Image (cartoon, rainbow, N blue to C red):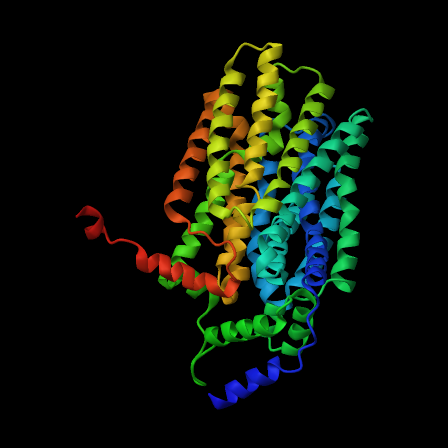
Length: 490
């Protein structure tokens, strides 16, 4: 024990003077913005097929069924990417995982844009889908570990803002390129997505530091100390907390082997870890079960169903939808650290349920100008309410509540489930509304959003203002304070 104390003292001695809070925060913001380039590219790849799908169908002879498979399969591929991203983040580091994600985005966009048949489209979407899975994991993990506790909610909202910005940019590109010849328009819409990854790869290699927690976990404490000195006004205390957290996760004796990450998460989790994983997985299920993927991918179809007949009017309404979604996502940036995670999630789920109910009523009405206007307004309200909470806050929550030793792969598991749900919605939406009706489909989404409100209210503790090292004890306390069934019945 004496040697451990001496080692910790040596680690914390001679730490470079910490910058002023404003300087450290500025550096952390720059790092978060660079990491969020991954999210912009993901958003662009996610949204571009909304407008491009019509031209792909005309040019390549793709049927509705093939289109559902093409779009849904991308999410299945991203499931593979999200699971692999957790392992990659732990092995090679968060920063190198960002660079790998950028390389795959570049390749996937290029192959899809150059496709000369359905098989080539699927191949390009395979690579892009794996890249999407990487992007959804690496940016939240990187930012959660690089951000000071006082601004983690603020910085952790940036990836979701970036995703929405990427979606909006894809809608604008779809609108701007729609009048080009069909065989050229969709290729340019998708091919533009190959440009930003070049800048992201360069940023990851030359400008982004590795996270201090990963560095400590791999014994590179001198580098961790230098990074903390740039991003934290209390670098000494933060390094001590991280070292202590890593020590607690290490074997207690020389002959003891550390438990495997997968075993600790899924096979024999501690009560607090089990509660954390249920919270994370539940949030990911309800986020996609709300039908947000259907609106992102199929908004033009919904607007056409409501009576908007002009292609440019449909794409213009879709741009409006993306604009509202992107503007609304800025609000959590300023509220996540003051208002808290739970109130924002509760308000978001309630608002989504109400707007989806109105959306269902509007598409059921006779196709008139007011029904079309109500449809666009309700869809915009849904996107706004989603962006106020369930869009960004679940990524904040999921990336901050897991213990350091489990964070990357636990985030990967949650993201994989998110992609499964997204694929389920993307691959069944057309078939679903053809089978039960467009209005009834949105009524189902409204009911699932109401269920999300109940889940958040009953199960999620508040996490704002707590350091990452405090989260496990928070969930330990939540488990300890949970009333027994006997006490509940008495």
